[in-house]
Image (cartoon, rainbow, N blue to C red; front, side, top):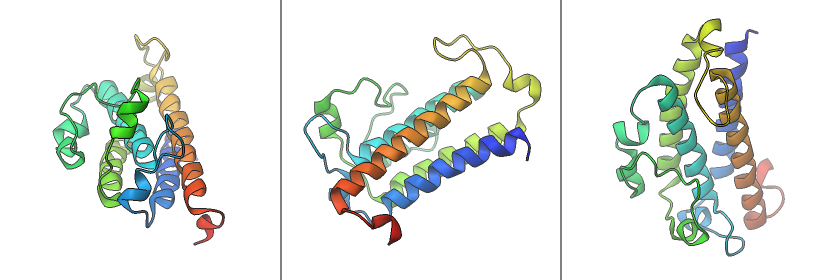
Length: 172
C-alpha cells in the first residue's frame, strides 16, 4: 500500500466512524448536550466536516464545498467561510440546530470526495510543499492534522452517543 492509499483510508475510516455514530439518530438526539458547555453530536459532526472542508479548500485554492454546493443553506447556516466552529462559545454550540443525519452525511461525503481526489493527485513534491501556516509546516502535516481532528471529533461524537443511548449501540 502506498502513502496516498493510507491517507485516503484514514479519511474513509473517520467517515465510517461518523456514519456509524449518526446511524438512526433523530434531530433531538443530534442536539443532545450531555452537560451545559459541552458539544452535541450534530455540532461535532458539522464542525469536523467544516474543518476538513476549509482546510482542503485552502490547500487546493478552491471555494469551500460549504459555499460552492450550498450546504450552508441546508444547515440553516451562514455563507461565511470563517463559520466553522473554532472558538464557538457554549451558547453558540447550544444554539446550533442539526439538520437530519442524511444532510450531515451528505455534506461530509461531498467534502470527502474532494479530499480523496486531492490526495489521490498529490505527488511526492506536493506533499512536501511548504505552507505558511502557524501549526503545519507542509501539506503532509496539514493532511495529518485534519485526520487527527476528524478521528478525535468522531470519537467524541461516538462517546456522546454512548452517553445518550447506553452500551451496545455499536452492535446494533
